[in-house]
Image (cartoon, rainbow, N blue to C red; front, side, top):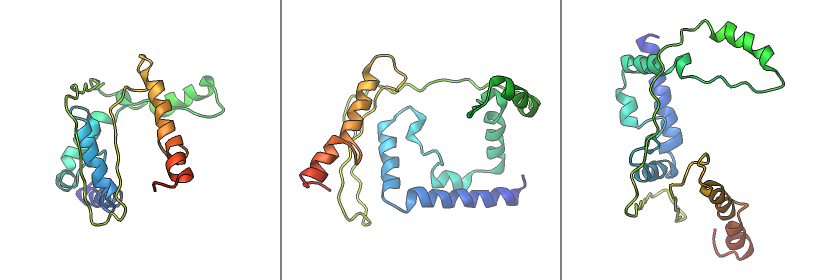
Length: 178
């Protein structure tokens, strides 16, 4: 990749960030909520990065990151469809087996410190016509084996979205909320 192609792609990423995060109040608000909710986990940062980071990334930094993380040692191949391992394995070996494995990067799961106080975000934007309220909680992963995650999943279904019982009751049936 040459410098001109890299700089062109940087402009594409900047435009994508503007479209997804900066053209509506929900983008910066969501970023602020994630930054407040997570103190240690990478979820606190937007996947695409912040604009000030995108603007200063160098081709060397991008290539170093790519070389470190984009290797078979850090990849998972997912196969879906009406096939068998006997059919797919020779193809995987043919196309992916020739790529050097690379270095396996250490994997670690960030552990959030205990939340000892409320974290509150108040966000105002002149583009917002209808005030809104949101509340979020950190919850165990769905893979947790403590039995809490399935109950929280059911509670979320009841409380949220256009099909949730809370929405149906307050917005559809009683018409006391929008």
